[in-house]
Image (cartoon, rainbow, N blue to C red):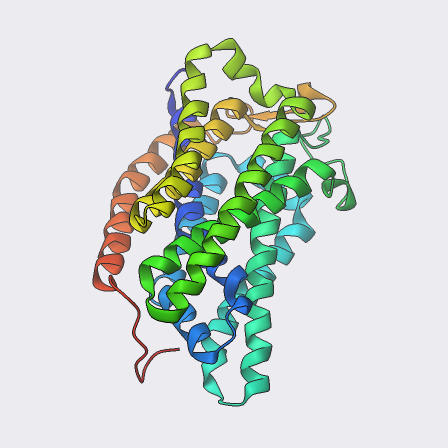
Length: 340
């Protein structure tokens, strides 16, 4: 792997989307688990566990999309036009869950809160599913014509492998959210979250195993680089160890370490995804020659250079803001007059 400007931007875009997965992943996981809580107080506690941070977490998605647009405009155009309906659904789901968080507590009526509870949960699950389906299509490859434009249909994106990756993403985020909830709650809800976390860990491990086998069998090009460079197998081993360490730390009651292992799982999964994709940004199937790479779909070298300077200034600010917010709102959640 040669570290030129194109590669640096490939890594940077991956880092931004990985940050989004680790941070907003537990937001979406809390939403997916929201309806399992039977009491209004429990649902309020779950909402307030992410209340101070959920909107800041989504900054990583916006930043990642902006970086993709600036560095690889042809990829941005092809993906967003080809996945147009899917991205509109994702945008609708993200907006609707945000509205649900803010509107739920505006009225005391049970039907009102129940309506927004359903909206919050549905928006979270749909968002996680669509993110996974999009990644599954990028991994498996999509039809691209000689002009670099998407040549498929929306229904063609709903193939078994992308859908499997979508379900696996939902399972991963549910596990991530349940473990995060353990760090932020206590009492009866904490005990419930411990049961939900155990079930979601089992759910994710099964999904991860099935997805790995499906990838090796039906998407062999995603493992080609690891086969050609055996030292890269260390990343796959690190991923397996991170996954295995989640139930181990959870069993011993070390919830913080289990959460860190969940983050490490996401990090190593994204590393494997990036290593197997490189230098492709969008792999074309069945015509591999029409694929979009970091070299034929990038901005001019001057643009990449200027944007790298801007990113060098902006990313530390985002990191500092994120660290500050998490430090200020650390500790267990308590319901107050201003709570959701």
